[in-house]
Length: 485
Ligand code: HEM
Image 1 (cartoon, rainbow, N blue to C red):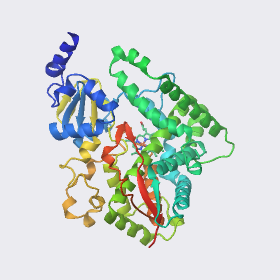
Image 2 (tube, rainbow, N blue to C red):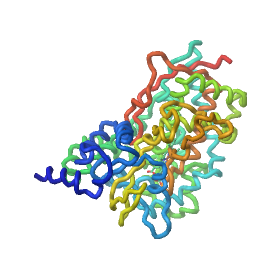
Image 3 (cartoon, rainbow, N blue to C red):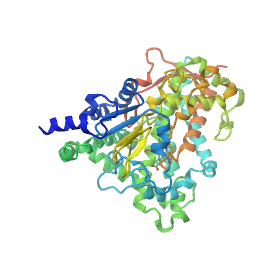
Image 4 (cartoon, protein in one colour):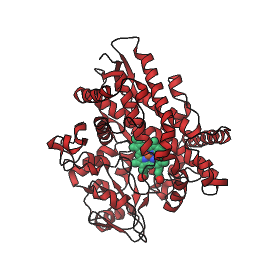
């Protein structure tokens, strides 16, 4: 009886009943949760937008937008006096017993207090001191690849998913804690890094239980103890590493420098618990995402030899050896930047979107009035695959990102301003500068040193990968051989 009432209410009397969307998704929350927990939310949202338009009701209380103006309306800064759309607490919640942190807090004031403390680690000035570390790790990756490929002149089949993960985690470990995870050195995942991937899935599962407050307790009891243990273990390892870094006697420039500096004297602006909790999240936020972008872009380049040849020509025309490649020498390379932008469009590392809630008093997005606490999202992949925004949207075409005077006419109307892979507004990604540097330096070094291509019979279609908030990367195999030209 209650279920019948809920379904009828959701379909016909709910304040969102006027928003287009399929019956199955809007009458109860179940279809959405099924999609989320099976890792299919991204293609499902694309399909729904293609069928119902650029504003779709995807659950009784959820609306997804595939219009570029929704970015600013949902995520942008608010004029004084207006309440911000806040991070959705269903998804952003520290595990039980763990303090909140910069990434998870839904309170913008709390977030800004912590961001103020850590921001000096993410500026242009800080990048100058971080650049040698970034290039050192990228060079080490090249050294490891050389070891693997020189034995056979036909090249070697490399699982680049693993190697870009190794690189990104080792680097973030060094930049955060002053200590690499040793993944590249040992050619294998550090157990903690391995655990992180399960951790992400756990977070998605836990989020889905929060949609059903009445039965949340029952569902929580079903969470396997291994998953709970893993969350606790993850946190306590992070705590230990952070403590070690804080006890380092030698001064070093890394992400911890500002939180240990005068801006946070005696931990008055960011408590020691908040620092520990934030830095364990930073490891995930700053590595897995970059590795996805590297893997996805390399996968596309290997599958498009004509695009790869243009990149090779730009890089080899400019650099003669690895030591010339760094954050600053790669910054203004039009084709390299175009490849990365196109890689981020098609292989967005956070492709399911950034969940927000409508604040008290409600709000209007793309002309739709939405009551407070409506769950809203911009679907980045529905936008990336919208023919209204991108000509030949499904194809990997870096040329669409070239400066207008070099861009082919057919892409002149592409909506490049519809892409925000690093988010926008007050909660945008603080690591964008570092991430772009990692992407530029690593890809430039890769094509300077090696010829890459597909491995016949082992070609990855990126769109087939599942998403559990972030992309669950399967092995991506690439043929890598020392350059012959
Ligand atoms: C290609 C690489 C990356 C991508 C695509 C990416 C994407 C994003 C996105 C979309 C958000 C916004 C989340 C939201 O609004 O809900 C975000 C937040 C964040 N990112 Fe990144 N990121 C990348 C690399 C990094 C790196 C290298 C770091 C640090 C070294 C980092 C640290 C963070 C942090 C701390 C936040 C939370 C900000 C807040 O809530 O105030 N990210 N990232």
